[in-house]
Length: 254
Image 1 (spheres, helix red, strand yellow):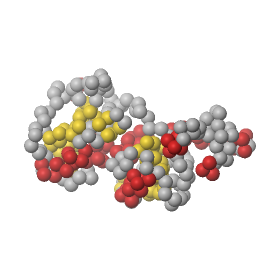
Image 2: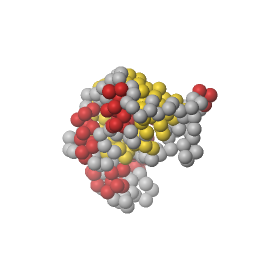
Image 3: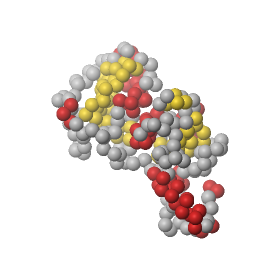
Image 4: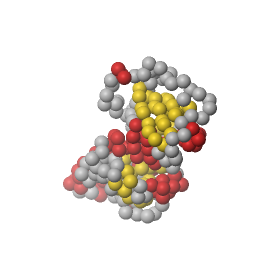
């Protein structure tokens, strides 16, 4: 995917990213920030020299991509303003959605299948060019799918797991409880979601004392707002929010 076109596209090219941030953390934070504008099916981020400080975000529809670009252009993200543009060509994820028989050009059986999006077939390249493209693909295009199975958290210290879940209350409260959070959710990831609502103060993510129905260790979090009145908007907007495929967050008052 190229990065120098203003032609509308469901894929966004984001650069000027802080290249000191861990790749998995970067992808999680980008997902948390941009998924509020539309459904994301793909994120490409690589730490190799050519892709450093850059990422591609693939939305299911143009409206979501456009809304995200307009809202987040220039936003300070890890101390650096985001630069966002439409990508020049469609992502592999988009092409697979449009055509289930689509074969990425890096696949072994794709030597003469693709010339679309301005790509030459591999048969038209010299041996050296093929090798260079193969090496480049290994560093970027092959990482285009969002992993359903993320890396386990760096710490599995369950000694700090609370012994109980805070009691839910029915009346509005300045303190919210978020449950059914995937293991990779951190205070920073959750803050990106809640800080867009007025009155947000802080989040505190911990392990949940109980496994979910699938027997998986999950997390929960408390989110604090300045007042019950300000917490209402965030609670109503984010209760049931899909943090990750198959993971809907529950938000209640405590």
